[in-house]
Image (cartoon, rainbow, N blue to C red; front, side):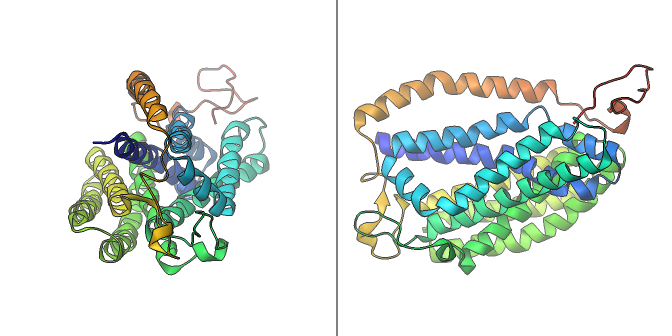
Length: 347
């Protein structure tokens, strides 16, 4: 296997890890007003992802950096053509991160309510636009002979791409609801399980429709396997959630996300950015790649550091593995906690 193919596969793995891990972060953020009827319930929901959300975003940074180093032509055409969409995603991620950090700084309901809006918007926008972006990457965009994007933002808002956005939105909402039901107890868990059922039905319809469209229009024959796996995993997740088997439900939603990502990258290969103007103008793993020497150096760096990163993140999830509930949240700043001490507010 050529190094260009290896790095295409590694980039697909990085995006898969990002969608699996950041997917439940997005879901928790989107569902915050629905699972958190009280301030303590909202803090319970936020604290389920508090120790891990920023680490999960590292997968995005590494995926972007790997694309820049391994396939600079792909990176250049993608980021110039998708500039406005990616800018919206970046702003949303910044707003969400700031909201996580600042919502507990002042003991004011209005203050926290405003930052909660930032969390919801900052989670919903990327969950929608990542689906729109990857659907366009698979379907192809207008590129000229110099691999320059010749369309506009409206070009990206086609029916197939919008369905892809709705599919990822519903899938991440399901993933987040199942994660919340797995990590909490009490009222938050009860509401999360109910929301997971609704999000699950939407995911089966929207995600199934998007995958079938992808397979029929863009996918090679073998991608029928991940399509069927994704459909079975989604249905299984809904059934497992109905029986309060949150661990199995979370494993199945993660499996569905993996299958969806495999379908997208499998439908894309060997192209990395097809041209809808003329197939001869498409970027592929050959004409978009860096020099062999660059890819060799990157491969050794990946071999050394990837296990370290995986071990650290696995340890983080292990340390923060237990369920939490309203009783685990200390009193707000300035108010006595259950143990009689004053605690800093937990975000």
